[in-house]
Image 1: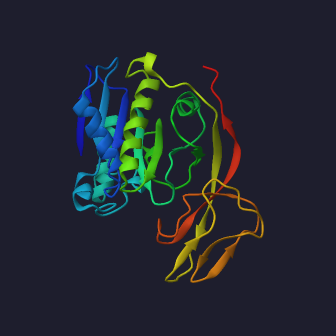
Image 2: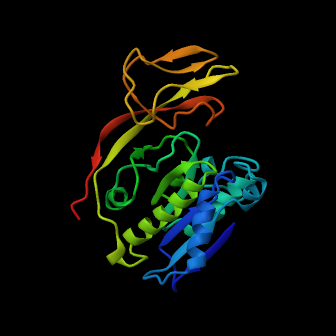
Length: 264
């Protein structure tokens, strides 16, 4: 794990890249901001989390780091790493940068819609906010609760790397690390509540027909395994839906619950 700080004093803000070793966009954003070394108005920690997985170009070494929080000093490599991350930045307001195989745009994931989500997310250049509300035990929220995760675009793409830099600057402006005069204007952002995973049957060829965040109607085919279609029993909005993003699921169902609005 690599940690570097800008500004003097104990940081209350952190930016984390490289939680997954096959998602280089966050590493690029951290390195870009550190190289630029902007003048900051409050201290901030920059973290490259799973250096061994990054060097190997794989998601993790022993266990998924983003399913290993709050971690354990006696656990697997990633569980030990999670415990170190919690020790380093557990009290910080944190941006965690990711990428995906399912969506080319940007969206945020939060544990719950709280004051942090309400104040920050409308000022980020994102298409949506997903409220996970405790789903996926062991995520970073279990150890670093004041975290906003952002999916920056397609995994390994130049666009995701560029997006990660833009998102990081917007986050740092919003939380007062970079000058407030440069903050982006707030806007309405749709909110979705994460639902159930969509299981994959064993097969060789996987297809998806639906677009993420676009409602799938009851009776509509939205994916297929070896040509055998999956049909929606009831309407839902797909999230992280892709043919090959996960081994055992296509993605997740979600429900549109409203919007985040900022009057600031």
